[in-house]
Length: 134
Image 1 (cartoon, helix red, strand yellow):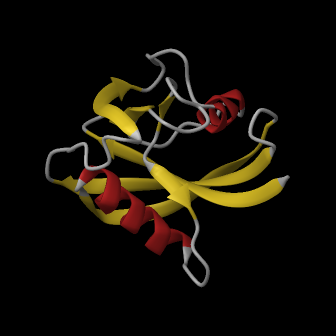
Image 2 (cartoon, rainbow, N blue to C red):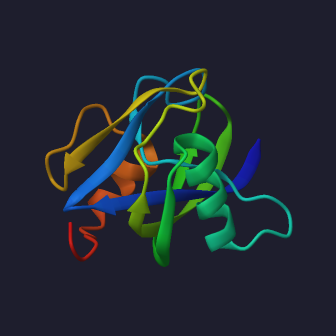
Image 3 (tube, helix red, strand yellow):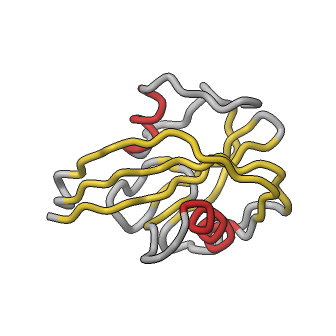
């Protein structure tokens, strides 16, 4: 069993949120925000900026901490605490820079979700949380 810390980046742009369809890992076929594991010694905002850049090529002018989820993935024998970070002031167009991990990126209106969603995103929505401007 493994417990980890993940960072999910909620990219908000013109009232839309960016999601990608996962590939090649637990949660394959589900829609998720960009993100990944927090690296040793890394700050949460640094992790969010790094993951956003590595996965999509995007940069953001501002980041703010959001809520968190605590999810168990029995099939992988993993538990993750995912801390969500809201990213705004996006520069660029999303590119699929990790095609072995993601089928592609798409913009969605908050509340008009694709299905199925990755467990941490489902958990976030079950809290009833909504970022301003989305």
